[in-house]
Image (cartoon, rainbow, N blue to C red; front, side, top):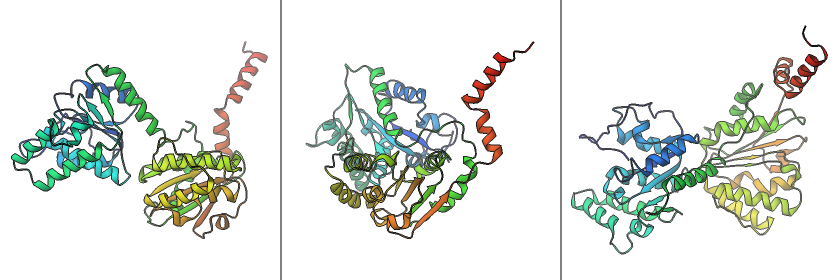
Amino acid sequence: MAKEGPHGGSSSAPSASVTGNNFDVFLSFGGSDTRHGFTDVLYRSLVDHGVRTFLDEEELSDGEYIKKQLPESIKLSKIGIPILSEDYASSKPCLRELAQMVEWCKEGRMIIMPVYFLITAWDVEMKDGRGPYADKIAAHKEKGVDPDTVQKWVDALKEVTSVKGRQLTESTRRGEFAIMMVSKVLKRLRKAKLNLSDKLVGIEDRLPELRRMLDTDSSDVRMIVISGIPGIGKTTLAKSLYNDICHLFDRHSFLGDIGDATDKKALLALQNQLVSDIVQRDSAKLQSVEEGISFLKLRLSTWKVLILLDDVHEKSQLEALVGSLDWFGSGSRIIITTKRVLNLREMAETDDVETYKVPEMEDSDALKLFVDTPLLRIVQNMTMLICPKE
């Protein structure tokens, strides 16, 4: 929660500037009823698990203007967690934060995971005009807050109750609840970044050309194909590119090892995974490949999406997953890896396809990669056994 200063600014602990940072989670909380209790427990749990978490007192530099920085920090965050306590609606900064989060969520740029702290969704929604939140909103009106602003807050409170939240009661163990929330957050975040080896020899040298081909500043829809012989690093290169740019998109999905998916059952499973990732359903339940094509064609146009299809073999795989570029919203990008020589322009039925053939590794890079392999260490150990030093 932001603390309002005498001139509408904010006071907070000195820290690094928000500018240029990306956050995994933005925590919005209501003050003394949670700040040094549950909010602190949740914040520490998230940080301990490597989740980059924005908490205004931790992240804002001393003297930074809260009215400008907080909305920017929300936009830089992937997940918003409003801790909806009884005091939350008393705070104008909290309500501003919530309205911004709801707006960002509607645009598909943030996931909201509300926590109801010793209250219920019924209190927040104010259906019958009674309860602690209704009283707090009435108090804001009496203090002369602009009616349009108050209505925006009311709409945001109602909107957030439509999202599945987590209830924390008097009997709930705070530590266990925090760990559960961390688990939910990590599950969401795993869909954003792809695991890669720490040893990425030669990858950085190839990324600039791929970034140029993708041109993420352009509003058109583009598809690029990364091709090359087996084992040359197509998937690693594509994953590195995906991780580098995924934050620029509303939704993203990685579908791996597509080559084996040749029958309708396997293609349907891939469609369901794609729907789960993009539409963000916990589990999609498409019944047929044909239904999946119709659904994807309808819904993919809603967002600016990034999709990585790894190891494509056949036209049927593209037809089921990314049939035509006109399925996609403005600025979307599709990355495909394949070891086969495919006419992707024909497969995708478009000329807006660029192909990048991964060059063979330079001798110096190959040596660097070999030096750090388990095989070399085995050879070195065997040499020491056979020819021990005197």
